[in-house]
Length: 393
Ligand code: LLP
Image 1 (cartoon, rainbow, N blue to C red):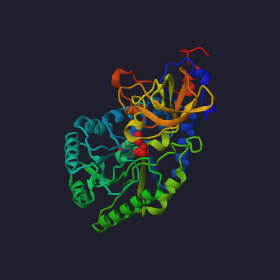
Image 2: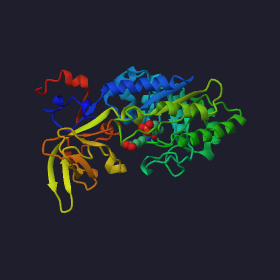
Image 3: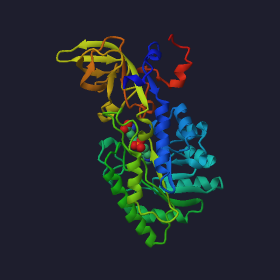
Image 4: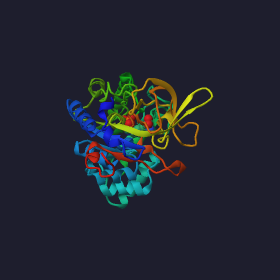
């Protein structure tokens, strides 16, 4: 929807930049809170890896959600943004000692522990500080989420979590360590999942694992089911807010919860993808042997998803309504994979036309790089542009 962009404010801004629709973000976090709030003890953590921009983190913190972090840097960013440590969970297969120490000193709610050796190190580091670390064990549930191979995490062949057949040994170990407080189990099957059936399968797996532990007299107080809810990249205007209602209802109906048990979610993409747009300028239109290339000033350095996962983000010419033509829409980076879309229909492009690459709020800015010595781009919200002195309106 071109009307959603303050084009007159974009005109003189240096490109590329991310534009964050803060109204949509507010509506999205309101919807998450309303839908999760229908069920007792459903706790939602925002997966910071999707977008760690301080303005965005500040807004998400203010909305009351917790945070799911995967590094010391993310924990620090959340503390700086004002998240209360007891709303922070921390996962990751390779936690360094300094990161564990930072988390222990901050007093975060829970470590999601991914291996037995990690469990021992957390116990040692906690003992040295004379504190107890709350932990959930991340179990690899071997559930196939039907998504791109690079973003499935819950298959036996993936590096994440503790194998199911190791679960009982790991739980017994966790309950025996002096400076560990075993709180429960953590899972995450993958990302950009649109089939509710995949989440249902995860619920069934969790139910079976819980039965197993219960037979041994082990209580699971906290269940963390991870994130993964996908978004509509094809028609973002029709579905600016993902279907959180069905998502939470799926867990409510299929998870056999024990009395007093809390269920934690770690949603990233679903919260921030649609509020973000990468705004770029057309540098050149080049006639190749067989096709036309639209060469933009944004590339895989600002949005790596197409190059890494063959993802297709909706692209729009914001400057013209001229009849459509087909283009290979490419960036300026010296890599053949620096392509946003092939044979893509766009209103005829000219040098200087502004181009929007939609649904770029998740895994855009947070995965940006300085490859080719490029500068990291800026981001703007409508609020920033209202009192922006850097351009003539
Ligand atoms: N929890 C854990 C343990 C995770 O590993 C992830 C994502 C999430 C939560 C959040 O998943 P979400 O709700 O955003 O799907 N760069 C890729 C996505 C990688 C996701 C990695 N883990 C992309 O651009 O598609």
